[in-house]
Structure formats: C-alpha cells, structure tokens
Length: 80
Image (cartoon, rainbow, N blue to C red; front, top):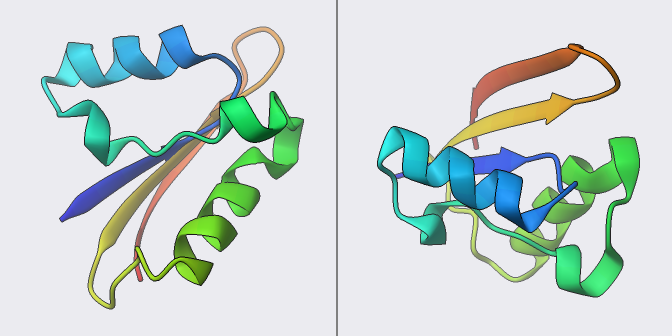
C-alpha cells in the first residue's frame, strides 16, 4: 500500500491533493487537529506516530512531500 505523508500545513490542501490524484483520503494521514502546523517537523512527527501505533508495516511505500515559502518543495519515495 502507498501512504502519502504530506506536510501538515492545512487540511484543505491535503484533501485537494487526494482528490486531484483520485486516492482515498485514508491514505493521507493527518495530525493537524493535535498539533497544528509544526513546520519542517510535521512529516517526521507523523511518521513517528504511525510507527508507534503499528500502522506502518514493512514493505509499505511512503510518498513524503513538503513545501515552503514561495515555490519551494521536495518529495521522496521510500519503502518502510
């Protein structure tokens, strides 16, 4: 299964990304309600939470994507 771990800046942005690629929102974990926008730490915090809860399984593919001011952004694909 592919899990999309996006920068946790705004729920609407994450929902729009899911809709645009036609993926179920359940594949886009969110923790905005607990912490808000934690800037550069948002993806590592989210991955740590999922790992501690046992939601990440060996072999899961993760797409990590973050963005910042202006048009700066980065993404990567990794296998857990």
